[in-house]
Amino acid sequence: MAKRKYTKSQLREAGQGYLFMSPTILTLLVFLIGPIIFAVFLSFNRVQLLGDTSFTFAGFDNFSRMIEDDRAIIALKNTAVYVAVVVPVQTVLALVLAATLNAGMKGEKFFRIVYFLPTLTSSAVLVMIFMWMYRPDGFINTILGSVGLPTYNWINDPNIALISIMIMNIWATAPFFMVIYLAALQDIPESLYEAADLDGASGIQKFWYVTVPMLRPVTAFAVIMGIIGTFQLFDQSYMFSGGSGGPDNSTLTVVLLVYQYAFATYDQMGYAAALAVMLAIVILSATLIQRKLQKDEQVY
Amino acid sequence: MRQNNFGKMVLYAILTSYAIVTMIPFIWALSASFKPLGEILAGGLNFIPENFTFDNYTTIFTEQELFPRWLLNSVIVAVVGTALNLVFNSMAGYALARLSFPGKKALFITILAVLMIPAQVTMIPNFLILKELGWLNSYQGLIVPGMVNATFIFMMRQFFINFPREVEEAAAIDGLGRFGTFFRIVMPMAKPALAAQAIFVFMAFWNNFMAPLIIMTDASMYTLPVGLNAFQSDYATYWNYIMAASMVFTLPVLIIYMFFNRFFLKGLSFRGDK
Image 1 (spheres, one colour):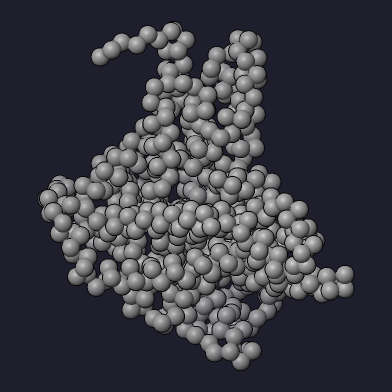
Image 2 (cartoon, one colour):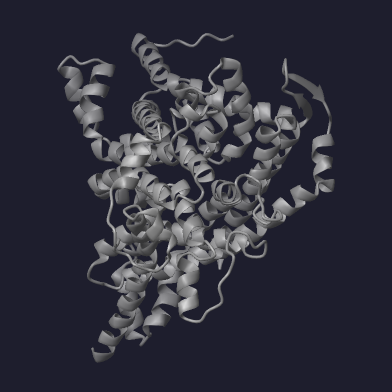
């Protein structure tokens, strides 16, 4: 090895650098990078946890098993539907709310604080409140019934249960993205709107031709964060269904299935790890595709 | 101008109705937490309790032995976890911004890459690692794996890059070493960045459901989210207690938010600009 000359002060600074980094390096190695490699290893093994932990190499068995696993396919379908509905709805709602709030309204601060409440609140608390309001004779059905709208069995009807979770989560997350949009809106130069005014643009035209294009980078951020978040749906479906993913698998998500295989039975960890690795690949690809699309769009 | 007024009214109508939609679940839950069970089950839409009572709160604290314990567990994990994050993320961010050492670039890239890995991948291996360490069902099992956070290392690095060098040079002339400068001069000046970070990290620990669900197997070691869920399945019809517990759970975050509101939004807009 070629020896490089370091001055004493350079050596000292390097030592300090490593010292400052040491908690991070250690945690990253033991609880992040190590586990990622370990997860890939697990996904190719059959894992026996009872007694002494043992690993048996299983090739691609864990992956090929997914194709025949009805529950895996249902979980994937539920998750995909959930992502496809929640991400666009919450993003558009956030944009509309932010634009409304940014129109020079009084009480902006008040609305911001109110809108932010659900983001601060734990998913466990939100689920409890909504499960209670969703009861057959609960708050939501009482309101719906009193204005002559149909009522639903929000939690126990397999056709509705996932929609109940969607409604709750859109309600909870849209304001978070609204705040992000709001910050970006304030950076749009006033001169662009003045120019649009001279051209005789209406309020809606200004929104569509000035605001929306200027917010494209933030929209990309909101969509990517939305995709990452929604693909990982777990807390809500776990609590709504008491861990089962029911009724009739209607709230079963990929992460809930991973949890069930790995921790509810303790004997399918290899398969669970394979499902988790597949989910990570799906999330990363979705993120990359979204980024690519975004870049292409900017060319026009 | 007339037309403008009409437009404003429409905007206010949208904002106000959405504010109502946002607040109703909370107000409804808060009101239920002061109602006796009978009044809740009788139905109706009265937001002001007819028989106002604190019993639900006293009951969950006195007759539910585990509830105070869950609260304590949550406080320990969230406070210690946040404190460690503040120190370690700042140290790492500072080193990445200011110090030169071999492998710095590779480390920085690794930290950025790690930001993209979903937690589900590491969930099973981490469980096995914690099991080997004998850390299942322990505070350190929840705290140590989360004691640094790539997002906030990145954020602190950005902060320290823009930090005036002259301040540090002055401290060096006064005879402070690297560590003295960092802990006594640099950290106190980083308060706004630390405040934003503290809120996010605290909330992440406080609200985390999945990690304690997996790591804590003994009911006395549950944190509030897992406890609340267990509580709900045991006392499914006692909505008065569940709502009181939910309110106790939400209060600390609300207080912190009110205190740090300014920094909170700053932290958010920072993330948005990224």
